[in-house]
Length: 213
Image (cartoon, rainbow, N blue to C red; front, top):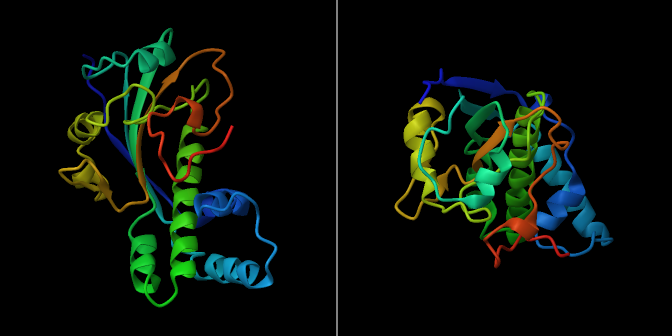
């Protein structure tokens, strides 16, 4: 294995693309964009309240050879022909979790939208980070396709994630802050344009955020 220099990158909220409110509605469980004035007003309020909340951090390593064992055929296919492998963890911090905790009893709808906004922001952070690499493939996360969720442990140990950017991992392999992601992608000449998560390939069939085909 070729050792990687682990790097940490900070991202101010202004470094991320504008909020995709359609995605926020989807993450909140809406099949269609609401037209109710009260809900639209609530969205505007949430966007204003959380405008400085998405302070992102990414820790990553670059590898010429894959640095730990996995039996995932999907990941192997993704990385076939790649000159490098990038493994990373990303978070937009605890602000979203704190705000959800503050509002979940007094204003459940507001709490739901704040949580959905946090999910949209961490995905935007991942897209922003990955797009800085020319030839980046799509990304693959633990629990996605046939990559077992236990790969979380390998990534955390490899990148010293908790030490570097403060994400912790519990016994159920869930992360805190909850608006955090771990993922793997490759660098390959002529790679397909970067795109977001493909729900059709994800093993989490009961995910509440699953896109309908």
